[in-house]
Image 1 (cartoon, rainbow, N blue to C red):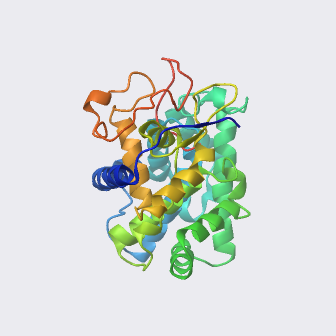
Image 2 (cartoon, one colour; image 1 turned 90 degrees about the horizontal axis):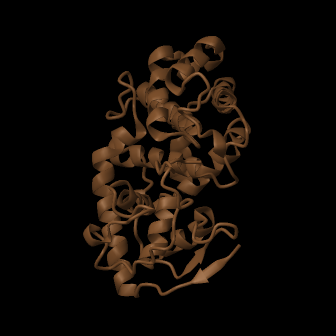
Length: 321
């Protein structure tokens, strides 16, 4: 696990840059969250209602599970289509859904082989439809568990967040006997994203819990990690041994999260702020637009660090694998 030590920002400039990321992350997330999460028309996330909110939370679990390693626009389309096609059955009785009809919905969005949704080269030879099937099965098992134990996900979430912290909710989802088979990795970004989305809705939209948004988690995908490396927010960079200059975001996450908490910034909004620097076309892997980037006055511009292989054919869309 190669490391390189580099010049880092002063404490003063670190605070300024983190504050800028937090401010931009919050304002842009509040403007874009409905699109990013992608709610179907027959779900209303805006108003707290026990039955509707229960469906919203269950949708988030399904949405995030199938999102991993997927092309983001396609997974948004597939997630919403599943809800439209199968309505309340998807939330309460997914085991009753015909696999034939489910796979028809999948192929209508993902293509006959499913390659329009999942990146075939990144999933070790597993057929895309098989990948989708076992993740859907994990969701189905989770809903079955809720039914058999006569529990509501909304009650579970509120109880855990009131008595613990978001990291405990993360552990619940990550280690759950039904869901664990559906996650990628031991510390899945997708599960962290799920927890952050839930905390956001509960606090900023529904106002039904005492847990603060300041206690959210850092997701840190490759693009977010790249921003922290390139700007000089961190002085230690962990990168791949076989592909120099490609960072290992999952290895950097603890360093980044520790830094953000040290300066009492909101992890979720800092994470989003860093990602938007990429998404808005400034800090791309190839040809970053440093001259117009909103961070340019503070950034140390260690631009050799990249998220992925330097290849102009790479799809840079954000994934939660």
